[in-house]
Image 1: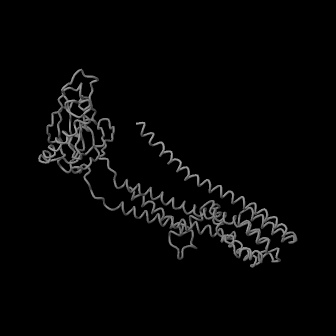
Image 2 (image 1 turned 90 degrees about the vertical axis):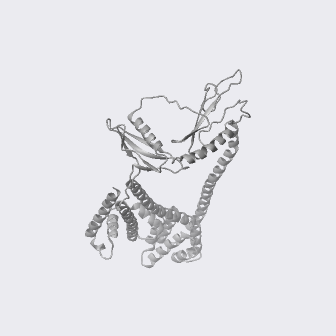
Length: 465
């Protein structure tokens, strides 16, 4: 099934490649099919403003170049995603088409001696009512031969002699519950207990009488056994209440009997039907596993796409923060150079000469190149403020543009006022960063507080037991 799903997806991608190649002939030469699909999907995308805004923060571009860069980045992202998707689908398709080794689901391999029991999931279908029930059949480890069993039973008897008294000092005076182990180490042997006076001492080793007038002798018997052999430490009898069983319950009992009767072999076979109940082995097929891989692969591809957009957004936020931190120094240097008699263009060049913010340097250099190419300075500086997208820079560039239009007589005075304002803005930014750092420090402090509370309270809880 998974192979067919992958083939359908590959066919859809092939059809998209054919459609996009036909409708976008200008991209035919030298471009591969996945690029046709990527360019076609890019052209049919709706709102690209969010991605455009992220890119705008990272590179100084005019409107046309920004639109082209946005389309290019989206196309590259779609192309990379499609390339990963195609490789992933091809791998799953090939894996699904490889013939699977046939396994008899009704032949069950048994765990070896000393290993833990395993469980086999089967589906029971009542032929009369068509009711279905899931059942887990316990498969016990392989059991012992007669020689192995005899050797182990001798060790079990010695073990029982050493532990049966529990906390009692002597078998002549038993005042506390006895210890009746039901298994011996990891051997798989079972020990069944019984007493001749269950109203005094139960088969679980507990003293059930509230009080006794005198010492009461209680005979204890135990049987050491597996499914095929038994050895008497003392004898025991199992009593079960007969109940009316449903068809499914009868099938469970029958499967348990089959499992017990074949414990000396490495595997055994359960029937397809038992007591008018159809039995189906419930095992996860390779198709199910491939389907899980397919779903997981789509999730991973989606997460990769989200990560790329998130990193782009994170770069833009870092750029805004970096440019905002550089505002006071930039405005201060600009005021100093203008006050020293530099032209506005020379002042901007000098102000960014030793600027640490690469983003601000690139934006101002881009603006200076625009003015050198013949763009009016007022327009170039207004565009610089809009590209930077921060209120302080927009106000500063608007101030400069207006003074260029009406003369520079008051520019120096206005710049001095702006520098003083920017100083207070910088102090406010520093204060906010300090508060954010303090909030982050609260997390490890809270973790340490929780650890201290656990360390202090844990002995108190232990002492309450």
